[in-house]
Amino acid sequence: MHHPRRLTNADAPRLHALRREALSAEPTAFGSSPEDCRFRELSVVEAYLTDPDRPVFAIDDPDRPERLVAMAGILRETRKKQRHRSSVWGVYVSPSHRGRGFGRAVVEACVHHARTWAGVDSVALSVSGEGTAARALYESLGFITWGTEPDSLRVDGSSVSQHHMLLKLS
Image (cartoon, rainbow, N blue to C red; front, side, top):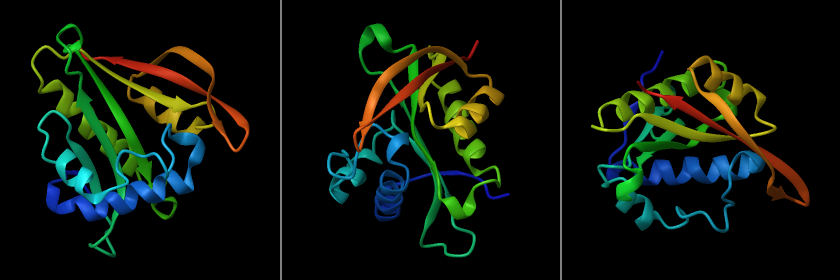
């Protein structure tokens, strides 16, 4: 099993490519679209990867090291009243590499990192109502669904709900 590693700004082109793949391949899984993603520009990805409070973990393609096949990011809330919270975002595994535990590995890396932040006691994430495999993975890691937002996204005219999930760290 290949282990996730924390990306550096040298990985920006590979993260940029994987994020573009994710938004195109799984439009109902993400709130962003290729047109409005904050990572449209490579320079934004490079800057993001230098932020110590916003690590991104990924797994290299075992066959093509110039490519990433799985990713997940975690961020710590910056506002004073919310510094006890963190959120996982952008979980994605390339279709050809699913079923190998890569999704679990990158999410576990995020949760492990959240535990290193003093005062952080929860990890939140949202998952599409259509993401049954992803939701099952998150539940197996201890996340609980605290609410479902109907009509959270509209993709090609279709309504998509989102389940909001939380993992208490203590």
